[in-house]
Amino acid sequence: SDDVRRQKVENYMAEMRFSAATARKIQDVFISEMNKGIHQQPSSLQMENTYVPELLDGTEEGLYLALDLGGTNFRVLLLELAHGAPIRQEVQRYYIGSELRVGSAIPLFDYLAECVSDFVISQGLQDVELPLGFTFSFPMIQHSLDVGILVTWTKTFNCPDAVNKDVVRLLREALDRRGDTKVKVVAVLNDTTGTLVQASTLDHNTAIGLILGTGSNACYLERADRVEHWEPERHGEREVIIDIEWGAFGDNGVLDFIKTDFDRENDANSLIANSFTFEKYIAGKYLGEVVRVILAKLTKEGLLFVGESTSDSLLTPGNLTTDLISHIEQDSVDGGVSNTKEILGKFGIIPDEDDIRIVQYVCEVASNRATLLVSICLASLLDRIDKEQVTIAVDGSLYKHHPRLENWMKQYISLLAPGRKFKLIHAEDGSGKGAALVSAIAQRLK
Ligand code: ADP
Image (tube, rainbow, N blue to C red):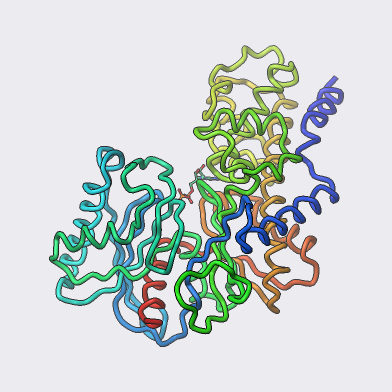
């Protein structure tokens, strides 16, 4: 009967629903990995020093540039600041052809420099000295605010000769080869840091930046005296932004106790197995695939789409994208079925009522697990930061579009960090504006 079927599905999914004890254990592991990372001991959390030691102080004025590489679009951006806040913004998107994204680094950086000068000249600013913040959203090791060594390319980029090189230097050299502007690269950062800094102009309690998009990562304001890795001379800094790089949380096996067969299959289907463990539980690039793996398994076990010809399309890795999970979750919010039916229809499946309920249940459990994992880590951060009131700035399409994530996060964080006052705000375009703002901070601190 349908009740038996439903019960069997719930049994399959039981491992994805954490008990309070499991949640506590995850939190303990996260805290321990953070402490190890910050003390330079082996850990799956890099806890990178960004060398951004303070936020805007309201005195920043003038024109600042940003170069944003590594997100969905490549852009150059000009920000005009008055009293530490943006009053004008100009943006130009540029296209990077696939032939530039692989191969030697010189043509790529020459092209980046060409776009910067094209933009600066189009603004009539070629004779003005302009500080530039470089958002470089790839794994890097920072030696100071303006030195970032590329660890490895990801996404669609692969220029091997840039690995282990300072990307700021590569950009400076390319700008020097042109010599047609007065642009000065003063800072390198990733989109997470940009999000925190950008949001701090909207809400001065901002102390955590979070990305929930294709990937996931977070950064936060840490007490400077707790940070061991600090290469340049210190100047009495009280705080500094730490980039956790939590996408790799668990790559060393510390999170294996939550790994299900579904996760093992998701990992096996991914480009780089055994890496970005945490991201594979939570980020937009993977959430749809987790659901797809479960649905395929339930179909094979005769628990879903019984009597339907099995859809090859649904059995193919990568075919269920995370935006579709949001649409199905919207049905659950509305008590409806239309989105779910339509999406399954596109896979050539005509579901019965129980199929629909099971598919919705799977999307809910996978989304809920992702939310709980993120919330556990955020609650640990709130405890660590220990400020009266903390605003968490979030960017990324998964957060923006998933219909239940935000409310669940509020509930879970409240439960897991009792007594802590926090607020979630949606901060858009940290990777653009945030980089220009960091260049303004860098300029002021010089
Ligand atoms: P990026 O992180 O690459 O800079 P985004 O923040 O736009 O860019 O994130 C893109 C990711 O968001 C994609 O992996 C996609 O799966 C996911 N996504 C896009 N639309 C939605 C949606 N409606 N609901 C949930 N996730 C979505």
